[in-house]
Image 1 (cartoon, rainbow over the protein chains, first blue to last red):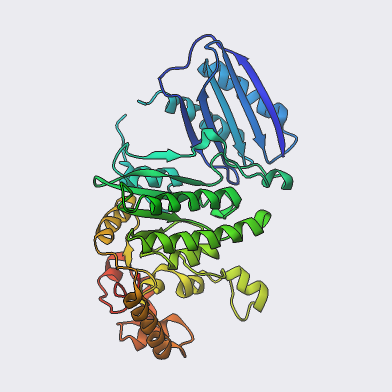
Image 2: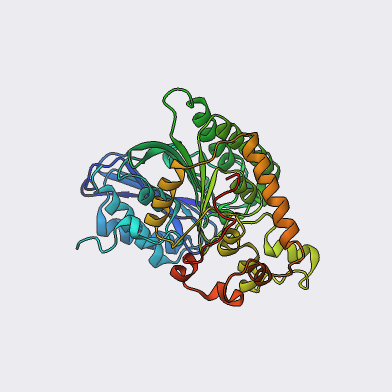
Length: 104
Length: 307
């Protein structure tokens, strides 16, 4: 298991009014993402716990690209990962931001 | 883009624990207790270098089913096989005790257990076994207080080990074709008794022994449904209305039924032998029928036991 954080600065507040959402399951090749609207609008944070060690640089790249695409200001993402591929990680992160835009 | 699939048309087997609850209950009625943001995670898994789940693999809360207040617990079968650990078990015990405590006031009309579990988590086995005992105790007390408990089983993990025992203690049991309900799982039997006793890779054998159709035809499940979340919802609504009372008369009748079943089928070597004795048409083909054809078979045995 490996744990690390990726912090980012954001240009704008993430859309929607929901306080939190959860998507996905921590299973083999999958991950769960818990999103909470708990940070200032100019910040975001991704907290990762992954079952697979040694892929920190790929995580960093995937998360940075996600932050650039969505600018999720104010959101804290917590991840429990069961060895998901990078495309699955991106998909779940995008789904989680989309869920925060749903009606509360 | 419009929603191509409404939530309750979705397949129970493919859905997550949260999707099952959302599709089962009235829209937006679910209120979760101890949700993922509370981070009630397992204190043990990290010692084994395992990542946890924010809800420890079980979602508990209350909601409405056709307007009636119900308590609900759903296991996530894809996280550690839905297995029971300390926190996971405590959450289920907690919701059952809350149901019991509300029995004479504003308590729930019923408790729905969406079981999807391989049994107890090996990494926290003692705590898990204790949890199973506490859950069985709590199930009995909830039923004694006059609140029916329904087991809904149709996930990929089935209901094994302590999960099989809990299922059997419920007022009513609903299964879909994917469901398997048993105590010792096929691989456990094979490891302990050898492949000649039980070949766990023979999926047809596994389903003939502990699968939904066998359970239903022999009275181990009360309702067989086709497998959408809506099917489970409709079955739950119907069964809440006719749940049996939990008293001595019911238990004596159930004991009698089981003794007669053992006497009648005790020498059968495989499920088709039972179907033949029951006089079912084409006993070898029961497993191959589609759900509609299977449901057309009228049988005695189901729907008249202690559950």
